[in-house]
Amino acid sequence: EVQLVQSGAEVKKPGESLTISCKASGYRFNTQWVAWVRQKPGKGLEWMGIIYPGDSDTRYSPSFQGRVNMSVDKSISTVYLQWSSLRPSDTAMYYCARHYGSGSSKFDPWGQGTLVTVSS
Amino acid sequence: QSVLTQPPSVSGTPGERVTISCAGGSSNIGQNTASWFQQVPGSAPKLLIYSNSQRPSGVPDRFSGSKSGTSASLAISGLQAEDEAHYYCAVWDNSLNGHVVFGGGTKLTVL
Image (tube, rainbow over all chains, first blue to last red; front, side, top):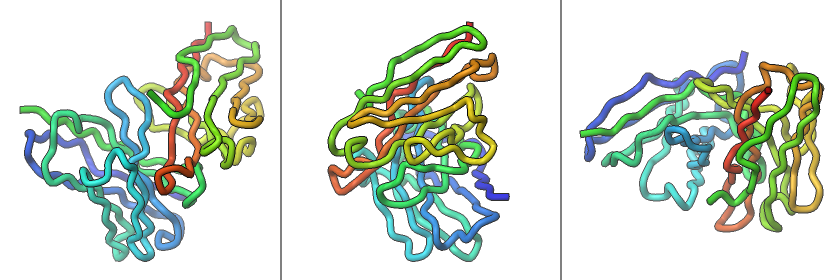
């Protein structure tokens, strides 16, 4: 079974750093892109970017370039989303999903989501 | 303001057929294929349709998708109470070095 399992909910203060994870299983991890998608409370979906585990190639949405960093550890089939300095506006649910590459809008499956709360 | 425009809400009664539209432009739907996702409150989104009209295994054939020009549509026939959810369209946009855009989402209410 193809599955993406994300790390648990986080509560952080503004200015703190954070890394959340997404562990893949059931498919050839190195050969398929993984995307990150943000959903603010009560709002819609926003594409943040994608990473290709095989060579760590990344593509960021213009809206998130410079604000987050995507990385991968191929040895444990895990991708990461990192912030160096969180803001209250980063409060959201974050999803990872297998993505079918440049030109595609197919995301399947999705992780269960990681809720990030940033508050002083 | 989303690049893809969806109606905020639609409604229907059990058994009815409803459609949800997704209006885009020449750099996205006009050149690439659309996908649709269903999100039940409290759950992650689920892929319903990809490549404009293809259904993943396990998705009932009550769900169908189509594309014409710079617009895509999702149709749900034989509406069921369990279909009440938010629905999102998505497409790759070729502008700005390429990126995915989502519609703002449509809340389907089954009356």
